[in-house]
Structure formats: C-alpha cells, structure tokens
Image (tube, rainbow, N blue to C red; front, top):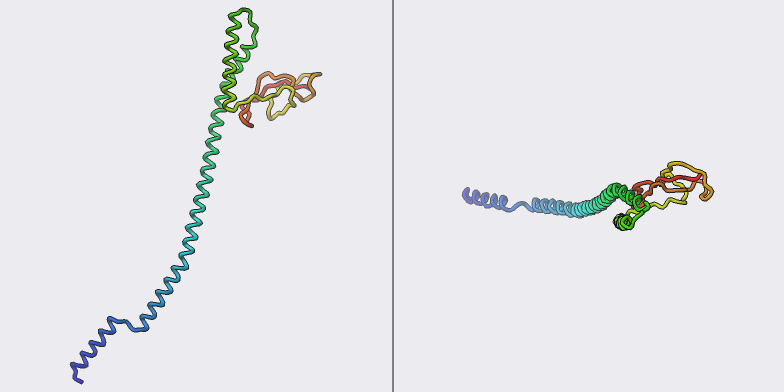
Length: 186
C-alpha cells in the first residue's frame, strides 16, 4: 500500500470517528438521557402535588378572607345603626314625655294626637332596623342588662326584681344600646 492510500484510509477512518460516535458513547448518552427523563418524570408528580397544595391553600385563605370581611362589614353596619339609634332614642324619650302630658283644650288634643303619630313612626323605624325595647318592669334585676338607680321596699314585687322603669332600655339583637334605668325592690 502506498503512502497516499494509507493517508486516504486514515482520513476516511478519522472522518467516520468524528461524524459517528462510538457505540459506547451512544449507549452512555442514551442511558444518561433516560435517567434525566426518569428524574423529570419523578419530579413532575411532586411538582403537580405541590401546585395543587398551593392552590387549595390559596383557595382556603380566600374563603377565610371573604368570611372575615363579611363579618367586619356586618359589625360595622350594626355599630352604625346602634350609634344612630342611641342618638334617636333621646328624641323618642322626648316624644314619650310629651304624649303623657295632660291636655285642656281640643287644639291641644289634636296636637297631642300628632305627637303620638310621630312617636309611632319613630318606633316603627327603630323596629325595622332591629332595635327592640328591653322589657324590665317586674323582671329579675340583671346587672348586665339593667342600671339600678335605687332600691325601695315593695310588697307587690319580690326582692331583687324591678319595681319601676325610669328610663327605657333598648337592644339590637343581643347587644344592649342603652341599659334601662330601674328602681329595684329590696
């Protein structure tokens, strides 16, 4: 064989080795690729579970947020009504004192009838907004609800019960707006 033929054969053999990797390299690369794919496939369920868990937690947090803001909104509404009703109750008290006065003329009677109508309207508005009068007369005295002004001896009412209501009390649901001022039997 001549030198030219040997060089041609080396060049031909060298080109084959550059363009076509050895069988061992192909097997190694395939094994590495399979291992990487297997690792990615193993991570995929873990990642999916992680995202699902995050989604469920975020959804629960949002539901809690909605409940909390709804509760705060209802509380704010109740506080606003309680504040307004507390101011309005002073007007109701004035009308109640006015309608208990004695009248001497027919004109006074008509005026008094108009006052009663206004008082009824005020009471209807209060009731519509959840404001209720606290019934106290004859009831057992409860320091959480009633405000005792004094104690008097009484034959008609048992000891520790309300004899007379001096100023009416009101509540919204279970929340007391104004405690009734009462006189209690000894």
